[in-house]
Image (cartoon, rainbow, N blue to C red; front, side, top):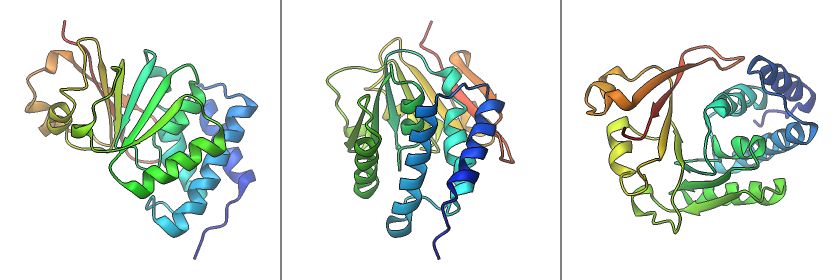
Length: 214
């Protein structure tokens, strides 16, 4: 049974969460985020894009979770690896229109949804690409790579070796701190664990930031 999309309740939670994140959203940004949420809830009924079914829960677990990394964005070009239904890429693109985002995923139905969302939201700073990370050969490099529950840290570093320039920053969004994964890496000196507080959610969240080699 489909969950009803209560726009008023979702708007209230989004605004409350944005305030807790110290993000000043414009009216247009709020409307686009809610439009994306409604589109995700609608498509999810048929295409199973996310295990989260309740739109109100999606506000916290998808929108606010994505927006929690806004202060850590830098550069002009960002690659969202394993974006799924456009997370965190689409919410970030709405908030940071000056950054060019490429959203990459190997799941065709999810990429189709992302392309539809880009079209309906009128986002001219986003491109969706259907391929695997290890097969992706972009014409231009990226200032930042980001992922959300994509793969293990060692595997992520291996897969992105050909995509990272000397000055590229890598951000990995995680739940609990993956101590076992961090211990296997040889670049601890350039790795920083940043705790994230996502409004309206329980449990830990963190951001693993890999800086360019000194």
